Amino acid sequence: MTVFFGLALGFSARAADDPLGKFRNTYYYMIFEADYPVEAKTSSVLAMDGTVLAKVTPRFMKDLAMEGSAKLRDGRVVNWAGRIGTESRYHFTKLAWGRGTGACALEPFRTIAADPTQIPSGAVVRIAETVGMKLPDGTRSDGLWRAEDTGSAILHDRIDLFIGRKSDASLLTAAGIANMQALSVSLVAHPLPDSCVFKNPQ
Image 1 (cartoon, rainbow, N blue to C red):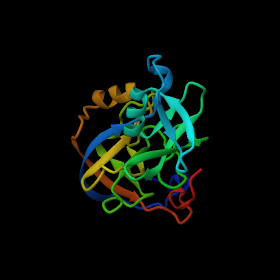
Image 2 (tube, rainbow, N blue to C red):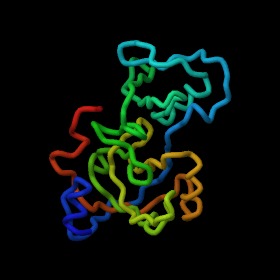
Image 3 (cartoon, rainbow, N blue to C red):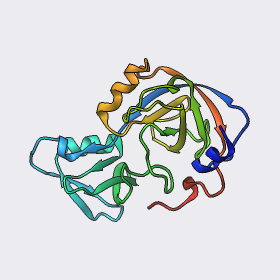
């Protein structure tokens, strides 16, 4: 990786990868209200202050709680904001795919959620098994991912790959990557001080 490419990604460049070990993978994605059947909207998407952001179907609400970001039928994007007790709360964001840690924009086939005690938040890593993997636009992956999200179940030797759309999980399958398969992860660069992980959410 060149210094210029590293700086463009927002990370300090390193001469060589630093192996971090094997991490079992899962994937997550944005959900789209337009993909759901038209049913009674009896569930409320709530903001941190209890304001009702939208009324949605129970099925949609269940999936939103799992995936964390969604596009409503009217085009607005809702994103996980935090919890009040055990209940997830949300906010609207202008980021196309939703928000990860800090002010980081989720990016399909580039963002991973990881345990910060295992992979530093904001680090760029290489996942060996994804090098050369076909991407949704027909190009091939360079294997570089950014640890710019976290998850309550993503602990220890777990990573969660953000793929954008659920249907694009087929690209992981085509690359021979199975759910919970242990993938080889190496550190390419640490975050710069102005990384999005350190900035206030948008």
